[in-house]
Amino acid sequence: MTKVDFYVLPSASPDARLTFACRLAAKAWREGMRVYLLCADTTQRDEMDARLWSFRGEAFIPHSDVEEDAEAPVALGLDAPPESQRDLLINLTLAIPEFAGHFARIAELVVEEPAIRQAARENFRSYRQRGYPLQDHRLSRL
Image (cartoon, rainbow, N blue to C red):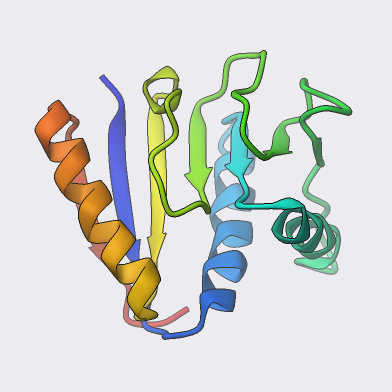
């Protein structure tokens, strides 16, 4: 069954979610996982693409838009699930995607911004009602 991790970040800035998403994607990729970053819109996807290119000067995170290269180790997408199997879904939208159960793990990134925090609470309740194993990670620093 899909495991869901909620990462509660010590920030009110929605930008902190994108920075943490890069860290999480890099770590998962180094561990051999195939990652799917579900973005809210094309602006956010373009921002994630730029961040992944320059996230760490000494390391490149191989990634691509899912429409261009579905086999990239880290794929960025909008609405549709990836065609190839993925290990980790990093959900940057405010809703649970219909295809969430296709992944071994889901990461929900939470900041103190009211709309994001409220959506995370609703998602938590929904995952719990569906019987997904949930884990809460409260981070003290980014």
